[in-house]
Length: 167
Length: 83
Image 1 (tube, each protein chain N blue to C red):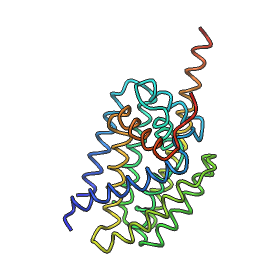
Image 2: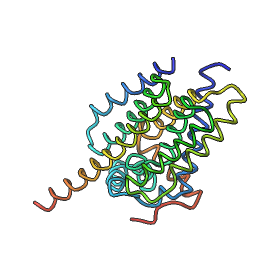
Image 3: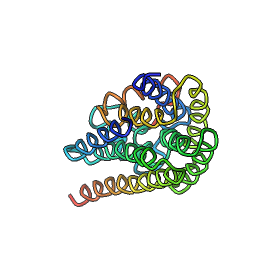
């Protein structure tokens, strides 16, 4: 398969994987750790959505499904497809506890992207494409224009019933 | 080619971090940069230990980012109290 198309498909799959899992696990609802609240309020002050801001802050401050996706892809690339993902899931679990985050978003993201990578290997997309795809996906959320991406995340959170109730 | 793509992303995010005004905004660009660097580590080293290195780096950068974001919030509160 053409490399560019493979990277784009991998980016879309990674984006869907981590946004859905993180939203479902409640990242837009409240800041998991204190640092996430600072970032969320700053995004809101700059014209964004508070729930989206909490989501972005939680991505920065603790290993969530986006970290799980990237690290599971890296582990699948270097170690091999199911084994690497499982090792990454264990290490991301330790990382969550180290960051005082009681959640399981990182572990869940790592395990689900391992299944997706396994399935995608049958159509010619390798784990290396998922590494680059995940970095591209996170740049669309954290690296382009924060008010717009936070509003998009807020809309998705509202649709899934996870929008924040904090003022 | 994959390493070149990641390298360009890391460079762009580093530049945005330098030129951003708001400190919290910088944290978001730094986070995107850390994703890119972790990916670069895994793609360049290409052995199982490379993945361990990338994971360790990424989790350490997440812990530091949390500490920095928390301190940014505390510094803002202290300035307001002084006034």
